[in-house]
Image: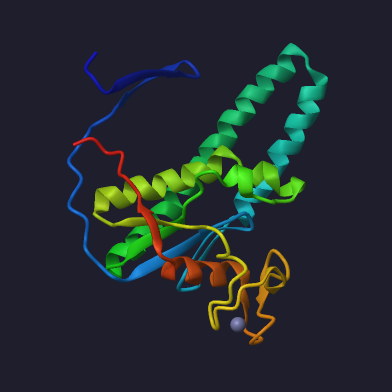
Length: 224
Ligand SMILES: [Zn+2]
């Protein structure tokens, strides 16, 4: 077998996955940035206010999550088989959604000649204060997969990805700059205690992300 090829067996069929490496194009130099806030209710919201809904994905994921818990309690061999089958389907659905969203975001950056900015989540697990009920979703592999898809599609397209410090992006007013925890009223809404500015919370965060100082440029993992 040649390098970069995997033989995968799925449901009685062999698939040959061939990996090709190509040279990444040079990055487009630009001062303009499209900020992207990745979240739970909306999988992604950008700094122009466009959001990519996670409603469908969330419904599917919750349904699978419930069924999984039931099957785990059952614990028989057929239950285990069903569990495995289910997790494959769920992953493929999620992966497809992540491909669609990441493609749309990168396309938008190309057309508007902007760089993309994301929160740098290195060490976020230690810092985060996500409520327990959200933790399952926030730390799921799907969340990291979407980030990964955005970064490699961006690298292929020559779009720069900037990683910014995630602290205070959701509690700072994008209108007057006032930073206070109470500004973030709920998961969905932002209301500035100082100037009264009101906006969808993810949209407000995405604007802050688009303006934030770059912590480090994301290193492309493409081989050339
Ligand atoms: Zn304000």
